[in-house]
Length: 300
Image (tube, rainbow, N blue to C red; front, side, top):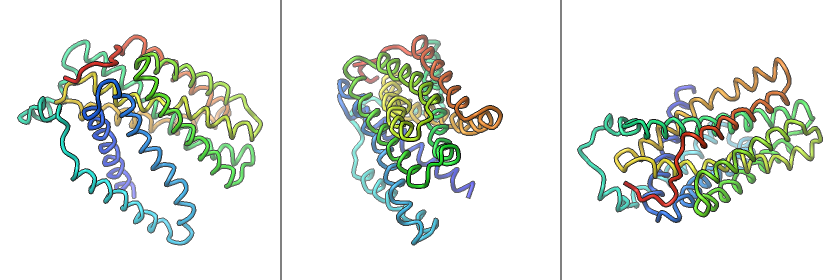
């Protein structure tokens, strides 16, 4: 099972990064962040679909049957992929003789690029750390501490995912209008405020609906990474950057539930959630000092 999940995670992460690169290369610069947001919305639509389908089918077909159902989207993705042509910028600018190692080296080719790469790794790490911490621990907390039954916990997950979907769409619209950095900073400050506010709530119904606003700021930023990484690196390294940077963030973020669980066991869950606000402060600093504004930049 562990080997299967590892392979599945590699495949899913790779598809997501390639999708971001394709969207960025195919859409005009003025709509590039929106294109990235649509790819991210597809991911959240899949999460939402799984959250709705799994409880309905699991009692009837079991977990093995659910895994078989999961094959169907893979066939759809294969069908679509084999009918897509390469974007013009990729055909025109890619060097087919370039090695995989040369693509990796482009991520750290000079001081300025290394600085951007470090900033993006911080952003993707914080993104995944916060996302996995909240989505894995919050339903359990609501159930055990506040007495949410299965239906209410599922409702919290649904409402939070809908908030995340709204946040992704809004971020894409904002980033194409006011710029990448101002949009990141706005959502990062919003994440700090909402995480701190959420950690102080005790009323179950308020927490249920506040989860939607929490989702807006915590996960909305994911739609900006595809645009920033596409604009920061040349064509020969664009898909490599998308996959490496985001999956490094996923690897770091994977420790989020462990850290939150450890803090919650020693202190309290509210304290653990409040500590999440600190990582979004780190996000703000990385955006201010490591990331350039790349809105409207022509792809190299």
